[in-house]
Image 1 (cartoon, rainbow, N blue to C red):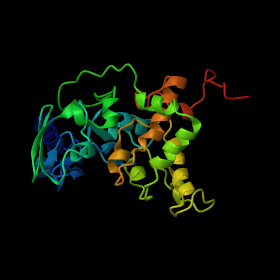
Image 2 (image 1 turned 180 degrees about the vertical axis):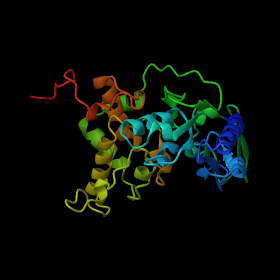
Image 3 (image 1 turned 135 degrees about the vertical axis):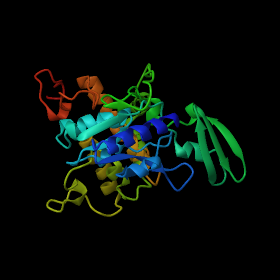
Length: 315
């Protein structure tokens, strides 16, 4: 996806030059070989800082909330779906956002790559679907498809849903027999095994809230974890408080999560917190035929009422 970089720079330069936007939100190269970082470009001479590759996994829609400036943003399929959610939920105005859409073939998982090496990775580059990765001990060529992030393996909306310009040609969408094999596997567990799964899932959680901070749909003015009257959850490492945080956060995302994977990408403990939101995404699709961020005219199912809503749970 490096071929997107030049087009992104050209479009960004033209937008800043013409004063159509005041800034461009994109990615720049990080300080580590496999790292990129969000960057805000406001000057024409700085557009060369913008890059795009298979490690641009964070969701830049997170930086648009409540912005009154006219801004441009580099947006993958999942990013544009969150932009739609922001517009529907009145967090941003469509006319204030210029979307440079990036057709995406998936982001790579840094942990899957790191697991192939016994020491620190010193260089990373890509050419199409071929990744070249080196450490002080060895150099390895890796097929990108073998190390995709889990959410990218199940993504059926790789192309931007809305955009003002494109950084490349639209890509073929995936067609999957099942979008939720991971959820199906958990659903088939016994009640005791399900509980053990989720207890083990968060046993290393340090309550840093990186998942919450990276999530583009976690934008309550005061998060429930910070409420003191009443206090919903304790501040310490009590396991009940840890579990309460993850369960409640997931339910706040129900019908709104696009499975962008930013929560997992940001987690320093490599916790797959998507196991919570994936189940709720599956339920929304099964019960309401709903996928988040595909329609500017509709609100999420838990934010709207229809006489046709399923009500079998009412006894």
